[in-house]
Image (tube, rainbow, N blue to C red; front, side):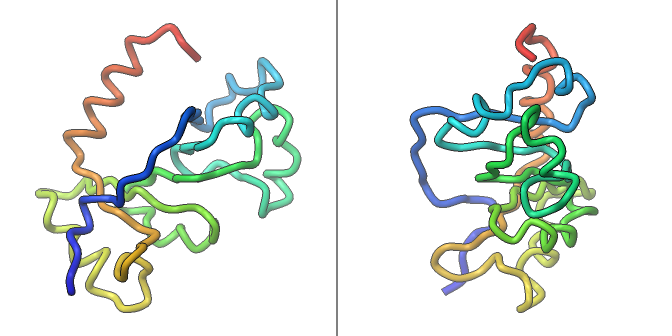
Length: 138
């Protein structure tokens, strides 16, 4: 049975941290606080625990990753983070153009009862960026 790659499985977390890869992370050692959350969502391909660079930044950015958000052009980089689930932002002309990227290759982990990769509508991602951009919270 085929599954819609834009609809992730329902999961509930009591708390979550959203972590970018900006140099402002180096202003405070928040790694332990970030890792204490039930879910950690990382944006882009900042290094984490499975790499030497990730170990160097652990005290500032933590090492835990529950979800990683990437644009569809960097989707193939998901192999570098084998434990994280991927939210691929489809930034192509129309959202369904990424269905083939996610589901057209049997080697991708976007099919089955508990897929690792999900496609995110770019409008949703744009709205999140707009709202976060207005926030004073680092």
